[in-house]
Image (cartoon, rainbow, N blue to C red; front, side):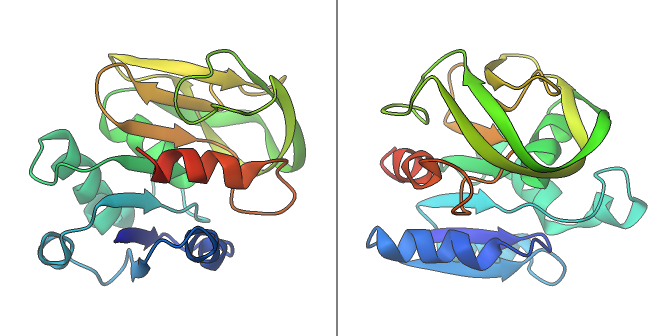
Length: 192
């Protein structure tokens, strides 16, 4: 079962739809009222954290479920593969010691993504593709032991992963049809 944490993104339901189209059972849990105990009792096989309109620096986000999940996965209290999308990407960067800050410009629309390291999540993807972006903040420096996998002209870390653990994140939205072959990225993650 795939647990999808909804951080307020208008696209969260599309992550669930992609999972369904790949014959993967999934459940959406709201970041604002789910608990870590709820997550543990569900025993998910993988967790995907959606995007959202907030900043990781918003005070009330400090006590939300998404931050607790990142810490629990990191500490192996919940030992499953993790994928952060947009805000989820920023939360992984923030919690695990990277640098998150306002981007050079707020992005909303298409960006050309260049894959620097195919790794697992970009397997079978073209080296360059158009993706849908919608964000103010971005990961400026990856956390320790993370490596950047892709960049764009305006964002140097469009995707990253931990070097030894199954923790991945992308700044753009692979779940929307605007992102070329975005479903392939989700499929690659679901195969881990």
